[in-house]
Amino acid sequence: MAHVTLRELTKQFEDTVAVADLDLEIGDGEFVVLVGPSGSGKTTALRLVAGLERPTRGSIRIGDRDVTEVPPRDRDIAMVFQNYALYPHMSVYENMAFGLQVRRFRKRDIDARVREAADILGITNLLGRKPGQLSGGQRQRTALGRSIVRQPEVFLFDEPLSNLDAGLRVGMRAELSQLHRRLQATILYVTHDQVEAMTMGERIAIMNEGRLQQCAEPLEVYRRPANRFVASFIGSPAMNFFSGTLEEADGRWLFKGESFQLALNAAGRPATAEATLGVRPEDLALGDHGAFSALVRVVEPIGSEKYVHLETPDRARVVARVTADRSVAVDERVCVDIPAARAHLFREDTGERIGP
Image (cartoon, rainbow, N blue to C red):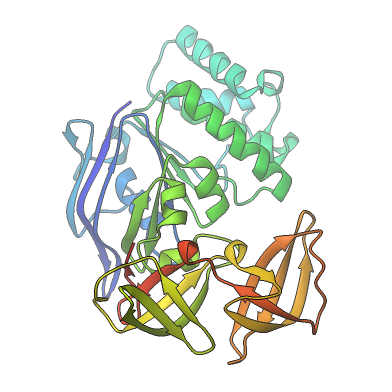
């Protein structure tokens, strides 16, 4: 396997900049997930690495080679697509073997690689079937097997699980993670699904409007989002936000919102007066006292938890996540507490994270 290095990678389509000055390094054997909303540039970035798009500027290195101008077939990469791209007239065995046959591998070497990959993926009993006889999960395993037999330096995945139903996606997430550990493969994986990103990636790179917003381990991104966009995109339900001002009071920072004040664990004079305070739904505590009172508008039971939609005195909407046994009813008035240690602060003008 090999590391991948992207430097100032940019792709412009006429007046649209799809990827802008992307700097990203993927370590040898690392699993990195590119995640973001539609139009964020993540798939374009993957296609640039694959050689399916030519960059406007910047460089791409795989291992010690600069492959910026190298054709896709010579980059030693393998792609797994959303639509599987299997030949319907070929058996599973023939689909997996085809790429090696084109490269004129010896027949016994092809057979050994195909059977080894099939064993890894648990599809040995399916080698004689055609794609039309397979389930969605079995087709995806076949597509994975076709890539594995290549033994490439880098695997590129373009939303490979998006066509599967929810149950299969959960199972395939676990299988892909196990496959990565077994192969010690270098993987760049694109998805719009934050659950896939958080559960599979050793690091996740969040993109928006063509620009990299943050790249870090999943829990680091969740606990210390670099800006308001990352804070709102990662996490479900999304983080709650309150606009207000920051000032120094008794040696600490004091956030003043429309309906509450909160003393924060930071000292010195704040660098900005206008700020946004963020708090995740699971960190809002409902009780007999708190920072402000709110009216319960909707209660959504989801099994082990409930999502409680609240309306604050200034008519803002926030969501709290509570345990299933927490008794709460629509039109009930509750007190909402915000633990200072769990609060996040962002600049009102740029959205960048501020404070500890």
